[in-house]
Length: 372
Image (cartoon, rainbow, N blue to C red; front, top):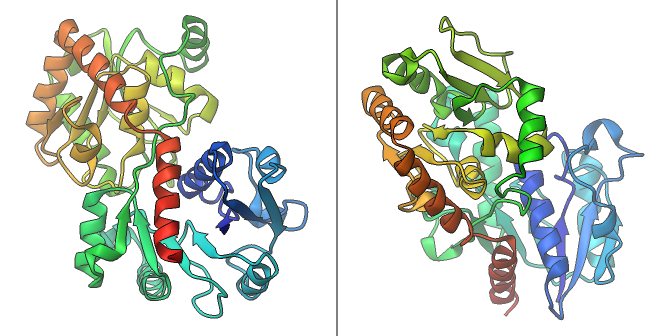
């Protein structure tokens, strides 16, 4: 097969989708497979503002022996929508895979597969403007109607898509993502550098999440204030992640917001944490807890969305809307080094069951079913 994968979303504008597309493409290139790949990309030189990519180096991928690289205008442009079908014809593509729900819904010369990670704008409408919700809903409906099959990242997400959009579950394939290989227990030297760079305390609970309401950071802060740990002089709660409204401010002397963290620093940051806490009310997959487990951090997550599906029995689970239960779990974990050691070991084992090699093989199996 000639398989076309759209890498135009590997840009700073799409951090999560870019990570997925880049990781999948890298795993494809590493597979021993007879298939050939067409990687569609947007050259920075021509479309620098919309395609800026400071996270991932596409150069090696685009020059791999089994890859044909084709440049295309950005996907949000009219030119990009018009050019793609012609490029797929030129490449004689047998299948096109879009990692985003925006692609040409008509005129494609081959079957299409789309990845839809979650439907958070539909499930949490108060987090988005009416314009965003209408665009999302219309685009998802068009994508689901145009694609032969859908890929999503968890059974929870699959069931929600089927329920909210009236899609037969059998049309949706679950393919789990994975933590990148760089997420592993960090070397002491790396930990020391990151501790110094961010002035990390010796004992701290860490949460890496955006400031979107469904991430539920407010409940975590409330739980910290309730907890016995929050009254200790030597224990801190550190928050990190993308902020749409600036750094978060708190009236607690041992809660600090680090803001966005450099990608290269994340493994050592996870590895430095005494405990990782992720109280989200919903995740289509939930990569940060998996990354934290891969780095050896003991983990607490909410019993919500796909999180129980991802962490299995390797983490403590709590009700996302019960700050008292979350406070008790934090106190229990930080007071018991043997429990933390057991969670750390179980988390490493659990994270090792997820890999991009496996994701690539399962995604290829989806392609083969579509083409057959």
